Picture: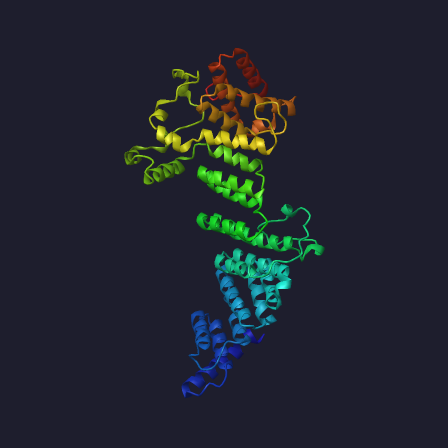
Length: 485
């Protein structure tokens, strides 16, 4: 192949030196294209790119980059990394923007490099995009498909600027007039370039917005992964204003997971309200995160960050920061010291001293009222009756019941603690009458904590009969409390 011929490149070097030594006039762009090709072959990329920039700027005369210039740049035998692929795709876009149609000598090196680093499907999607230059507003859905695929290629290369550019270009197209509804619009894949829409619906408004939504959510996901949450929220707000299809449940769950891990309860309320406004019903995963985020104790490093942020915001005194040790923070788990504590008016054990001394930190970490509020919302969503512990419309999992029982314990509502324990025990026994439920084995720690809270609540209400039932259930399921022998 001529591009890699050593003899041809040596001859090219000789001709270039001859012209420079004799200071002969350059009469065409072919001379500079050969200079670029030679420097690329010698791995002098900076020099090659500088020659091209000088050509575009008119420094070297009335010569502009043409298809042969780009062929010289793309046939880079030293390209081998994702960064090299990102740079070449930038030049590919520039070439298309100038109306230069790509040839095999441009596309094949891109595919070869993509195969080398494992990005061949995405680059093939990128190479489909030249068709958008010929599309008009009546082909807006086709443009959406091509630009969405192209943006996915940029996202795979971690180039969010390129992806945002494709999104902005896509939003310039007119919305299709065909308003036929797709079957099960919510069921189409999100955050993927592989969206398959029935042929008869490919020109519809729904199809157009599905591609637009997929592109929005792909970029949002990368922002969240990179902890650029402010930009992710801005893009979410922009998506809710721009397209009539609501964000998918999957996209909302990304935000829920991020904020639940950081105990941003006010943000979780905002997301919950957004979902209800958009008609996106939270699923069990979302409600598990909503509810448990209010009650779990974060690890020491996360707890340290929460305290530091509260100190910076003026919610906690600065003197607390110097002496605060995360390991001594509030702990909703089983605490053996509670056994020797005097009972509170509710009959429940007294709050341990090390927690009482850090009441402000306790309030920062635990949000029992918010936990109960999310729990009530879950029952409304699933059309269940929270007061009926045998209601079969809503079956909370062990993590949810554990968190809610913790919340009612902190709110000094022992009767409600028992109600939630009975709810869980009844449904697990109903579903698995002859064996310990699989949920018990998978969540032995929270389940043991639930039994401990239920025993405390039965003692607080002086319900000996219920206490005996709890002990019987412990034997049946093989539950052992941490302080039992």
